[in-house]
Image (tube, rainbow, N blue to C red):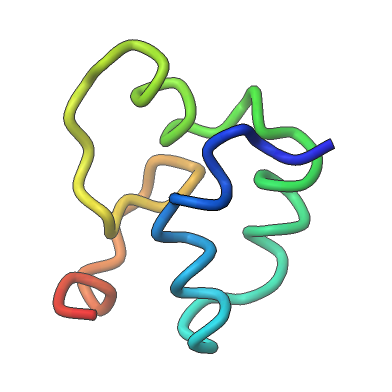
Length: 65
């Protein structure tokens, strides 16, 4: 089962463009999405920029994509 936000999540777009490793998608979007910081923030209506990775770390290289 995948995260309900996957189809609109920037992680999907970054992965399809080859900007992030498949481990992010496999470990969070397709498996343990309940542990994804992005998922938790979305569910709580909290702002989170696109370049925050599922573990909560920030990847500034993704900022302008």
